[in-house]
Length: 411
Ligand code: FAD
Image 1: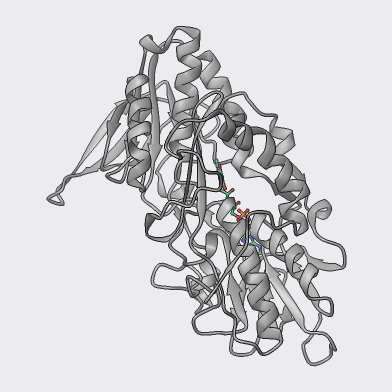
Image 2: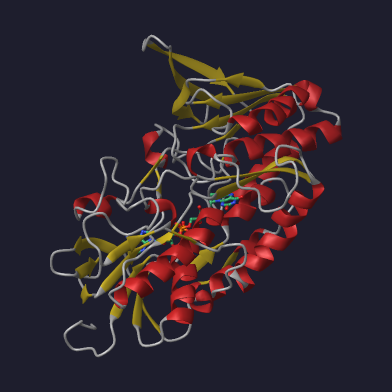
């Protein structure tokens, strides 16, 4: 495989062909012409995950959220269809699960995060049956809608684990759209809806809490903080939570359900920490503005796997892509990488069919609205953006190096 010593143009290795990895390759190819790029990606499908919330409500075709990986990889990129299991930053090579050793001059880590279904006892064997579902998986999002359609009375439980998770609003989006459906069918009054969160706030940015509270009230959902789902008994339809009081005392509560929407805890891929690239929690440790690794200047990271304290979203990746592309180009020219990411992330909270609270914010919860509207007000335009414009822009724009509304800042 390509070696920096045998190659005239610099060799860039990108780990992960998701939203961040494919987008950043496209943006780099627009800027840097004489570069050899190798993508390491084990999957043969690429997913547009933000639409899975809509799939779970019967409002989007699941097949439109997936395309063959080969169709989204930009031209002239070598694709190694394997997973990275180790990085050796001292000697500039990575090792794949297939045993290949691949050298690089520059490296971008964009391997996403790991959904830890295994951290909830009894969950994996019952997912997709017994009323247990999750919009966090391609194969399960359609099952969410099947359950919603068929439920006319009983207990519906929606869970949210501790942070960080990708799209922190997605657990409650599932609740809102399900309740909206039941309300329109006239059966919400017969369904007891519970929202069980490991944390202590409905949403991390205070400005968006009042409209969300209004919707939770409208749907008569019980909100339960400090409840962490630890066990599921699918056959008996029982969910067990560990409830931790402010004092630190913990006890268990077991509740019956007819429908259970689970979002699992989420961690960084293990190879990042094992390779010495992780922070204390295992996320790839980069400067939160330049996205350059804090110990290895020829390594950048973006997307869900990096250590930046922003909302882990495709919207964040859209902005990070530009910063990494610009800064990598500067490093290749021996210029100080001074393009800056402001922490932008966006969470379109689908509070009912046709209306979205578009939460856009950066570091320190600073509001960063793209359009000059009251961001805390549920809006139809924001729904149109979420359900119509953004999926189209994703495939035709973001994955092809179109950088609308993604300008970086400089020092
Ligand atoms: P991914 O897109 O997950 O890609 C990671 C890639 O890395 C994968 O292809 C994987 O196969 C590959 N990989 C993993 N391990 C390795 C390895 N060891 N070696 C090589 N490759 C590897 N975002 C929004 O902006 N708006 C929303 O409304 C929104 N809603 C969401 C709703 C749901 C239900 C979900 C699940 C997500 C949502 N998101 C939303 C979040 C968004 O999808 C992610 O933040 C985004 O996909 C992150 O991109 P990424 O490239 O970092 O990770």
